[in-house]
Length: 311
Image 1: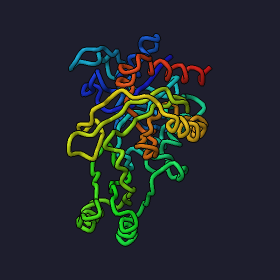
Image 2: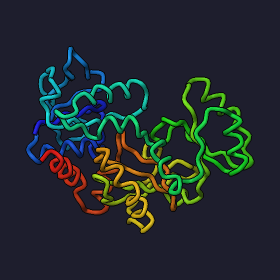
Image 3: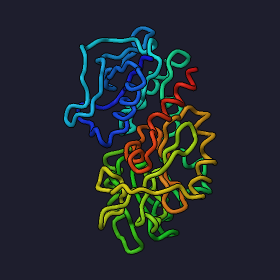
């Protein structure tokens, strides 16, 4: 097959952690041809969806993860699969790429389905499952947020479309910074904020469960660094081996059919204690850590699911 990766600079990836690299590596091992381009080089041209990029061969060489061919402009309708793999921010640039890739429907399989990536951002899809999530409010109005904090005392405040642990604050019952943080956030962004009841179980880790075509394949536990609330590996969280609990499987059984029906083939959900906190569909991570801990080929399972859909 011909496979295109829409992603951030391939030169900067960590070959031992990056999930996009691992997906490309497995595709190459399966005999598929790879093409790489950055989101800035995606275009609509008189009815065609094109990309300017380079043929790619990946390699497990630190600091040199890919050998790239000559620049070329391609028609993405001629490809079998396009991977939507650039990292957030989930801003209008990101959203526009999903609108353009939508136009490939019926010609090229885009993974994950861009229509539902756009309509299922990580912190909003969980609202479909309120019984699985901690108490949550999404608002820009300070009085609404203040009332939520008064009800729950200890809360987590973060940007609705943030990622990687950036801008995440814990405000306990004694904290006096809510107004200042609200002023800070609303001063540079028109987006709402999300506030959730603080879950003390986060000290034991924030579990990342990987689902392939709606079914769980395993999990890793991300333990916050000393003195940290955030467990994201981008900010020092430590990955640990962990199994799936009955509660994890219950959560996956509830959300799995929705993910499968909406073309979300590779998804990573976040679970703290018994609660679902995020459903990550834009650019999930965790494949390589899970493969090392559990000795399974997660990337192979993802490609098997894609090949089954194409068949």
